[in-house]
Image (tube, rainbow, N blue to C red; front, top):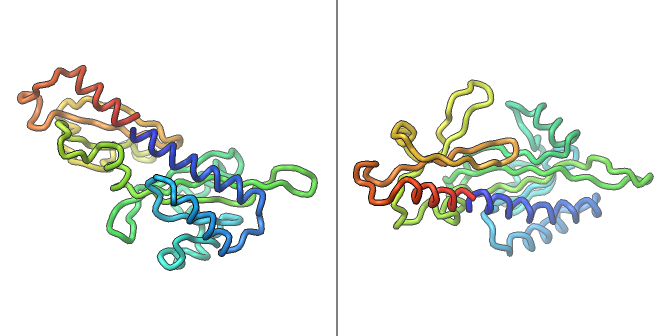
Length: 219
C-alpha cells in the first residue's frame, strides 16, 4: 500500500500539471485555488509549489511556504542530474526524506510541466512539486498500525557511497535476517525490511505469511 499511496499522490499532482500546462500564465490566486481543490482529495500531500524555469514562484499554503519563493526547485547536491532528468527526459524526481516545519519528515515529488508554444510544440515550462508527509504516508500505509505483529525498517542504498542508508525504523532490524520487499519509486528504490516483534524465536507466524503481510504494506 505504500507504493500505491505514493502513486496516488503522483496522480493528483499530474492532474494539476495538466491544468498549469494549459494556463502557463497562472497567478498565485489561481494556483491557490487549484492547490486547495487538489488537497480536498485524500492524500498525504502537505505542501505544493510551482516553479516556472525551476525557480519557486507559487506556493500553497502561502504563509507556511512563502520563504521558499525565489529558491531553486531542485537544490544541490545532485541538482544538475535531476534537472536533466526532469527537463530533458520528462522524468518524475523524488527527493528526501527532508525535515518539515511540523517536525515530521517529507518526500519532495517533482513533476515536469510542459506547455504548447505558438507552433504547437511541447516546451518545458518548469516543475510542480508536492511535499508528502512521511508520517501520514506510513500511517495510511499500515506501517504504524498498533496491532502490526512486525517491527519494520525502511532503507535505501546510497547512489554515491553504495552504503545502505536507514530512512525509518531501527537499524538493528537489518541485521536480524529480515524479510525484505522492494518499493520502486522511480529514481529511488526503498527496501522494507521486517522481523516479528520479539524476534524470530517468538514468531507465531510462518515466514511465508510474514512475507505476504510485507507485500501488502509495500504494494
